[in-house]
Length: 255
Length: 304
Image (cartoon, rainbow over all chains, first blue to last red):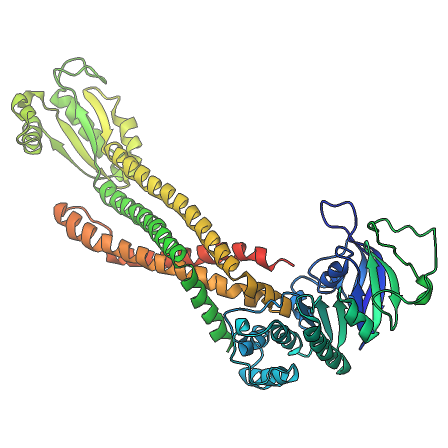
């Protein structure tokens, strides 16, 4: 579904790579948490999956397509297979909830009839039944994020990318959002979620990929935010970007 | 459905930065008015050239008692010398180039002079003796005056051979210079208009960057994203072009036809048909300019 092969990303003007030869495979239908400190490369990975950026080296395959080979003209059509949710919701303030969700379908050229069927369905699915005529500022943060999720999944994407979707929400509301994301995942959508929220990761017990300084240091199925497994101590692996107080726990053997 | 959406976006964009749109309209209006005027001025020059060049004559001036130039030596040309020139004009070598010619003696030249400078102080100072006798020659092809000059200027009693077109050329040079000035100003203004359109479109895109970001995220095609902006620029520029076309037609209708041709009835001026030919050119230039600069301006927002 998503495969990174030795992907390195160095942003211009910086010496330290944001991603350092990352290899990762995400299978269809998986729910993957990406954890790590700020600047560890989680957002860079999501941007690369979206083809908002190209890797400095290495190749990325998403949905069977080599992202290095997609022409920039084809990128919009590629993106129609992905849904994206952000921490800051990114709703259009001057459009109603219904129009925010419908906008996605309008700009990719869906018919009016399709829109009027699909949008109420997806709003009901995210639990916003009857709130279609509200404006974003009239909704709570959790409800706004539900609108954003509805917008992301209304086109039935194969992959949902979520960049700290609960970052702005209180724990109770966050759990509601997570229940929704799990439901979407249960319907067959692959979910890739970057998060700092230890409580959520620990509770859901899904696959966890931990990044430190642009390297994958842990890839654990059913893991928590901090690994419960006894770390292999491998002194020859030097993680250059480990900040003070962070003790990276490379556990290559736990895959 | 999509068309309505695109047009809705266009309307929104035009309303959102109305003052910039107005400035685009004004700048295209003025620059295209200059373009139109320059084109019409060129048309006028061509028209006047063909009119006047056909009427331009070559003058063969004879010596007077006062002239020292040419073959003259302060002695007037004798009737024999004049007859010799006429024989040359009738000869087989020159006759094919000559459409018509006539002789103007001192009395006639004096009368013409008095008529031409009526009311001028110089008219009272001139006597018939001071006037020059001349042959006035109409050529079949007015550009071949050099043949006549070569054949006749060496003859005894001939003071000079003058092509009237050399006087006209000065006038046309001035007109040409003014038309090139208009073209130069028009080119500068068009550059300004193109930059202004690009800036306006950038501003419009910036004020809609949230929508643009979401559009790109959900996979709206580049064409779909850029079309509203291009249409926005083209609409603004077309309004300016229509105003410019109106201005050019009005100038021809009221100033050239209404005033100039009344004042100078013997000169033929550009008419409304010429002005109407310029209109599609102006509309085309305006639309093309806007489409290209809007496309360039928006392409920055489409890069992935």
